[in-house]
Image 1 (cartoon, rainbow, N blue to C red):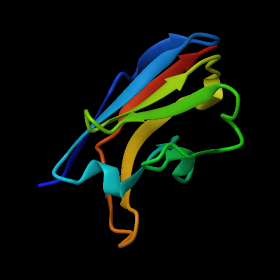
Image 2: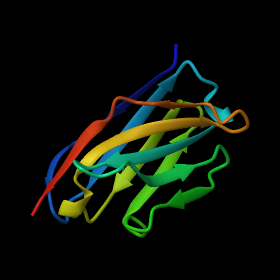
Image 3: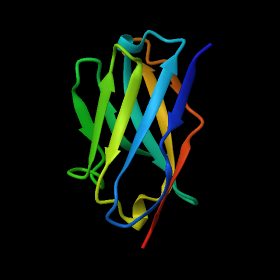
Image 4: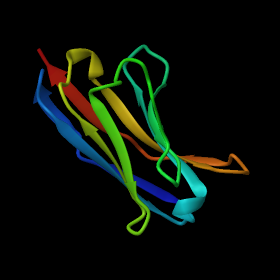
Length: 117
């Protein structure tokens, strides 16, 4: 049974930082591209960042230079360091695992991030 469990969300003020974690089980972690996506009320789910097993990263334009994605393959865990948070970063953040060659993917339940102005 595949489980992706996010943690680290919360309420912060603009300019502050948060670090999200995603703990994966039930998958071969190193066979998956891991990613963070977010969805704000009334909006579509959008890419935040992805990271391959060897550490190649990709970021959404709105978070470049402020967010950093990383992963620890030995601990089956992915992270998202979010700095200089803005109110528009408020959303539910979802962990995603996508198999590198089958493209089968899984989603976590999400963690709420709220940034007040």
